[in-house]
Image (tube, rainbow, N blue to C red):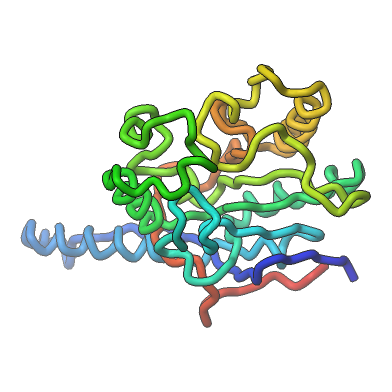
Length: 261
């Protein structure tokens, strides 16, 4: 049996976008009825978790530290939509991440997940937080070089996130020999140039190499990096490039968890 290290519980789920029809017996429905049907179908689509799976169940030897379920994040509170400390992704992304986990393990590492699928509700929580410029509780930890008022303009906070499409993951490497996180020369969710994958600045050769190891593992398994965050990767061929889901991060009776292979 494969061993899993889980710092937080995990749940499973997946996504299938639905479309709507608006005709009956060749007679078009009134425009208002069509709009209502279209809106209902769109709402059903973004709340459908049937194509998502739990990373704890589908990716062997993964470590979970779901920051937005905790209060140790740039907001300082548990984030809306994170009802349980789960890591969910589309089946396609999870399968690719399984390959990355295997490659990491061959090098003596495990993948440590900070965030995966992120509901739009959570993104809205970030937007509201960014608008409250008086709340700077976590400034010294996550954005000491910046005034909070510029975070939205600089793109650190946005009204949409690739995470909400279900195929993006934030992660680092966990060293199995030391039992500690690999030193990346910066912390997850740090707002600043230091988080750029190509930043060298005052980083040591080892820290730069560690970032490259993670980057190479993810690219070789079908993920593309982000040029402003060393921890952020999106499946190159993501299955839902235009759908932003909004079901909560939680276990529910409709979730199907893959059997351990």
